[in-house]
Length: 136
Image (tube, rainbow, N blue to C red; front, side, top):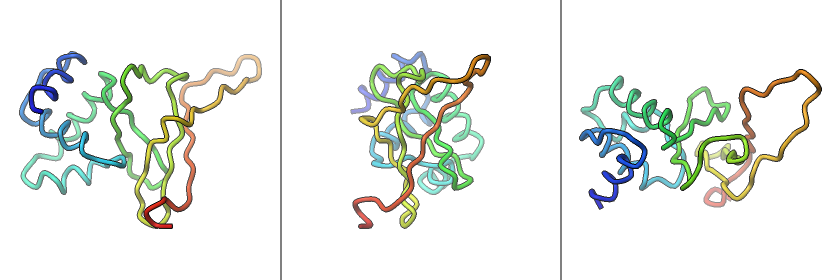
């Protein structure tokens, strides 16, 4: 398992430090997106800045994507295999109003939207809110 995690980091040109290995292992075990606070709770003795820099490195290298789900706390989730975080790779996210978990819905792609002339897209996000299966 550790070898697979290390290989994943190498494939994304990320140096496999101990913290990066631990964070990726943690992310692989999650069903929902996680916040920096979630990581801090899981790694009691880790420095907040180190955890933040790890997430930012993962995001810059296309290993995770960030989700602004309207809670005021950015969440992070692993990208799918082959994702380049390009508009055609973007998918819908679902935020449960009861448990406050945010889930990726990779099979639900964000549709292409025609913009008026001279409009330029810089960011795309689609968050659905409601009740997840566990809370229903």
